[in-house]
Length: 194
Image 1 (spheres, rainbow, N blue to C red):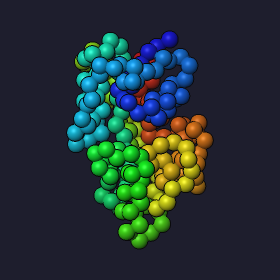
Image 2 (cartoon, helix red, strand yellow):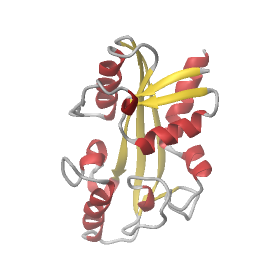
Image 3 (tube, rainbow, N blue to C red):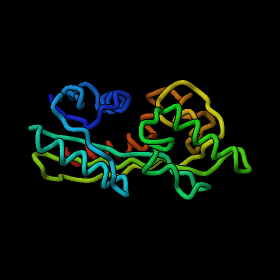
Image 4 (cartoon, helix red, strand yellow):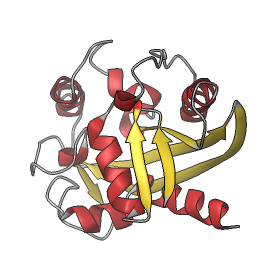
C-alpha cells in the first residue's frame, strides 16, 4: 500500500482525494502531523501556493507529500474569486461566508448564469524537492443561488458543461470523475506510475 500525506487541514479535500485514489492508498493529512506549521497561502497563483505547502511539509515528513490549491474563476468578475477563493469573504471566512460574498457580487450583475471554471494545481514533493506540478480544470457556469448539499466550497453554485445539476447536486462519483481536482489527480497518478 502506498502512503500519501495531503498538505491540508481541510477534511473535505482529504476525503475527496482519498475516495478518488481508492483502497490501494493510505492517505493522511496535517491533522495527523501535529507539529506541522501553519502555512500562509500568500502566493500570486495557485501553483505558488501549492508549491509552498508541498515543499514546506515535505521537509518535515518522510514520504510523498501532495498539496493542492484550487478555486473558482468567474469570467464576469475578471477571474475572481480565483486564488483568493478560500478567503473571498475575508481571512477567516468559512465556505458559507464565501458563497454569500459571491452571491452578492453575482446578484449585482445582470444575468442568471455566468461562464466560470474550477482550476486546481497539485504539487507533489518529497524531502524538500519538487517532483511535479499538475493542472486540472473544469469549465461550466455559476448561478446566483445555491442548489444541493453535496461537496463543499462553491460546489452548490457551479454547473459543469453538459449537466443541469450543480456539483452540490451530483453524486460524488460523478463529480469526482469530472472535477478539476480529479483531473489533476489523474495526472499525478500517471506521473507516479511512470
